Length: 439
Ligand code: 7TS
Image (cartoon, rainbow, N blue to C red; front, top):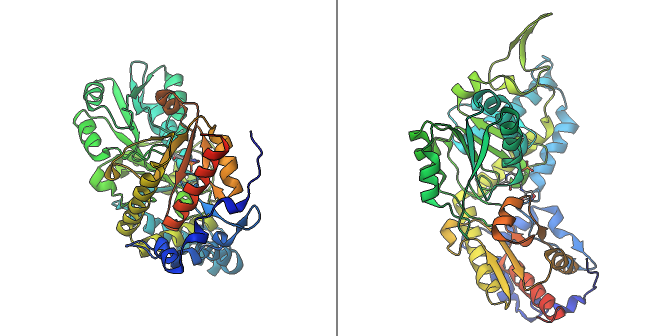
């Protein structure tokens, strides 16, 4: 790992812009970035001396607006209580607030009912819940689970564990260089009576590729194969409708969409959840407990044993309100504009390799790249000196790294508060790194 220190003045871009030009860089046609930035206390932070924080690691987790932080502290300060049990006023208020968020989530993804929304700890736990409570009971030795080469480890390892337990086979759909599915490979693999589940990301956390989940689900259903959609990278950035997609399961995390850590969502069709055994046992997931047997609770409580993460679920509700207020269409358009601009500017850099789709419609606001032979960790260290938070490594997608024949990439990922001005700071910092490495 390198440990060079930089002179901030290497980044000359901001000094050479007039006030009017600077303000133009903060605008987007759909979202008032400057206004939004005031809602995020952390964006006022200075890094490494007096550098403005340029936060470009949104695919890992997003920053939190004040209303989310306030919703959490308001719960603790004014109505902290356990839920679903006591009749006192605090318990009633807390239960109402918690359940109200379930309604917000159901509406967000257009689920038919709140019974289909299970709160978990994160997207990873949601997928593991399906692996343990559904796949473990539906797979036998001769069966297959089909995933793709672009999956996050969260959508690989649970299937390795469960197929390993029952002796079934974990199969992969090949992807092209831009992370797109090879449709011929898909058509061939889906047509298999032993295939019991298709589990795919809607958006790649490395390449940004958006998969044709609706079309793939339709073809899978023609073969009676249920579909799980890992929507950890899609629900935060675009309108996602589970009824339109007709998927059987969907998993995502609150923390990637302005919400707190510690809250995940599992959506599943009601009839599937009803037939599934519980995940873990304990309080709240029961109707009656006797010495030798238990009658489990109704949906969705059957899958939420123990005291849940009440405060953070309530915080997630505020995050959903904030995003709805901006509008998902506007969010997507803003991200497309900024990603297009970033791609354009990054392509100016000699020696850069950008992975993922070149066409904006097929991609989200994630750009993975390598700059010459600079190791991504060295590059991320250099960028950190300029106040830029960027991810480097395998991004929990080592199967994809093998497919791309690289050990690591650098990755920038944008969200609602990122501006073109920040893209310019990124480009200047990358230019400095190039100069330093003599590229
Ligand atoms: N699926 C995808 C597509 C993801 O990108 C991630 C997290 C997960 C599942 C797991 O989410 P979690 O909330 O359960 O951890 N992705 C990343 C990332 O790209 N960098 O850090 C975490």
